Amino acid sequence: MRAGPMSDLHLLPQDSFAPVCAGVVGAGYVGLTTGACLAHLGHHVVCADIDEERVERLRRGEIPIVEEGLAEVVAEGLSSGRLTFEVGAAAAAADADVVFLCVPTPQGADGGADLRYIETAAAQIAPVLKAGALVVNKSTVPVGSTRAVEDVLERPDVAVVSNPEFLREGTAVYDFLNPDRVVIGADDRSAGERLGDMYAGLNAPVIITDPASAETIKYAANGFLAMKISFVNAIAAMCEAVGANVDDVVEGIGADQRIGKAFLKPGPGWGGSCFPKDSRALVKIAADYGYDFTMMKGVIDVNDEQKRRMVAKVRRAVGLAPGRGLKGTVVGVLGLAFKAGTDDLRDSPSLTMVSSLIAGGARVRAFDPTVDVAPEGAKATVLAGIELVGSVREAATGAKVLVIATEWPEFAKIDLAELATLMQTDAVVVDTRNLLDAAAVRAAGLRYDGVGRR
Image 1 (tube, rainbow, N blue to C red):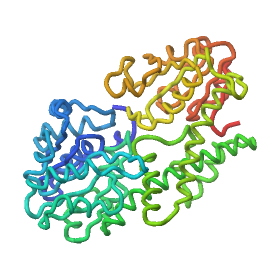
Image 2 (cartoon, rainbow, N blue to C red):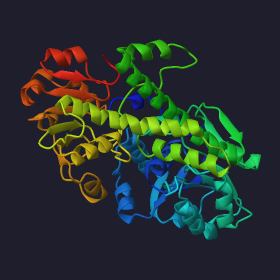
Image 3 (cartoon, rainbow, N blue to C red):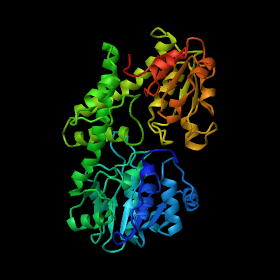
């Protein structure tokens, strides 16, 4: 297990409250974490998915995603009998008192969330739901989605509530079991309290509000965090312009308790499955109700600009004049996942940079500890055109520029002296995560370019 917050996880007592029979529709990142953690809390959980192969793997305890601590809680649930996996939404809902909808809500063409998967799941569980059951929207959904689910269910004897997740990829299990708060949106307060009882023992405040407010809380939280990252990236650009050091600037402003240091770490821009989708959905939701959310538009624009700035750093490292291509330039890239601790490539800033470099004629040789050198399926399509290698050494060999694109801890321990012997003469390390000590890189005979650093 990778070192991190999970090392401090304390197992909760299983008899701290009355167990509930729960169904989870969707065994992806959110659904699998939700199901396994609810079983860890003592509930009896049936987790269902439409992918038969995935279900078979999960029954064997094989985890299809990289997520710290998830294998352990799944294994615990399987051995205790509190967690089972089935095929199809109806199997999860048939005997459940509470059914969690944890299906994808991809970004639509207009920037809003696509609710087709939610509506399909609701239609599949409607005929088998027990009278008095709760149906819980756990997926990130637009304001008004509880009404949409109610309309599909056509079950007045069933309550629909909102219960957004606030899980960070890489620390999702820890976040579920150690939440800052549990947010529940329910028109019927008694339904909200029933759901709140499932989280007893987590030692976190339970906020029960109306569904529209709960749904807005989720988008607002992600929008604010994306704003903090875009802000510090814009400050980093300013630091480079005026000759300031962003590390010192962050230390100075982060010491202010009104601001704090969280999410004030400059980098190549934000990505993943949540921030890009949710920030655009927030703009779309506001527009649908007549508000032009110009601040959020600016946050998105700064993020797009940051990715372009990272590519510009590579071009400057090579010494290219504007308009000249990168043909013949070997660029090593360390990290393809959108952040460390996960294998998620969705909207990864690294892939955005790599695509731009390849389009400019560069030969990109990349290594990520969670990416196979011969990927299959969807990953093979996403990574087409990239020369995938199995080590840092291979990525660096013969490279004119080495880009640190994901903050994997092992990249901070690179043997810089060896690195200098592998790369071309007068090579450059473009450190988009400020992971390395700039002076140490230069002492090894390499040039260095970080984010917001002198």
